[in-house]
Length: 383
Image (cartoon, rainbow, N blue to C red; front, side, top):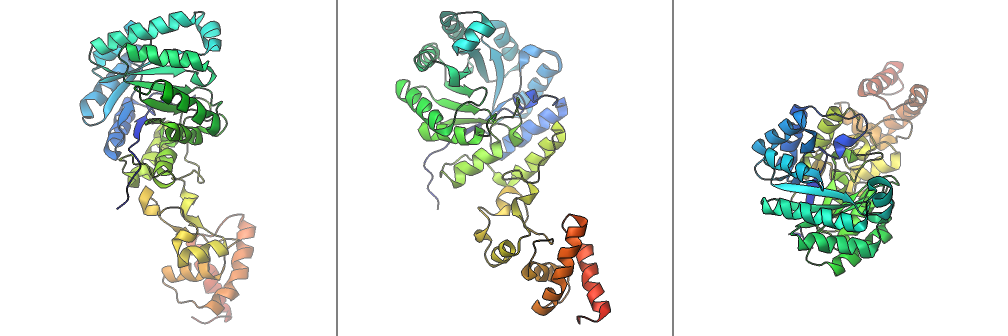
């Protein structure tokens, strides 16, 4: 039995940050179904939206609160008491209170001071805690925030009763090394306050940075399904969870066998097709065409597969195309019910490759069978 290093908690923000993807809108029915699916696969906390938007947003949040009983349901808020009143009105058990902490944001966006930021987060946190809510204090643009002030911010939130600190790499500027150093410093300075990683993918490092943060001491990771989110998106749930399991030996409590189902539904609901090469859940993850790869995978799947397809709800595919070898042709035709030996496969292989080049794609099963039958009719092979 595998012994895991520790349990990492997953916070999914597809319904909030994911829906902030330019051009993406979920219907209320889709938001409710996604929330149910997230709860069923084992997500610890679901960030479901922004109650201060009112209208349909609040309606969907109330519905999710009613249908989800195991996962914690979190709403996003500015450090404004009226925002928190809207969250209370929806019946959520947790709130994220977000405010900018970098001097760039404080001066140029808010037109305020560091002191104002500290006063605002303290007041909002105290209000939420008095109302009995779980509170995450979110440091927006934490990656560009002076470290001493970031520590002061965390300490101020802790003093007001905060339960967690969300480190936001808002525009994805960090790399794994700098992420590790910052989170390690925060962990050592404020050991009583759990840290959540919330990383963006502007440089393609969201997953790597989230994992670096965990290695430095973070206990929570914020993710979105398929990496949806502002600009280049957030750390993808499926990548983070599988990497935590296989590369770092951490437990998450997630039922990974439903990751493909979850990814496909989200792709449909968001109108953002799932790339075939998408890590973990793309259709090509277990598709083998190259002769060397197919031969190895047929002998022992571990030669070219990092984990089993069943673990994420996928199936292994042997693809016949330009780069195929005889092993693939034999395997495919035998699976289709045709008797074929090595000599016949060698005779068929040049035609397969020529056909694939002409089509500029791999062959369908009927196309492969047709080429095989052509050879039979020509008398060049025998059945």
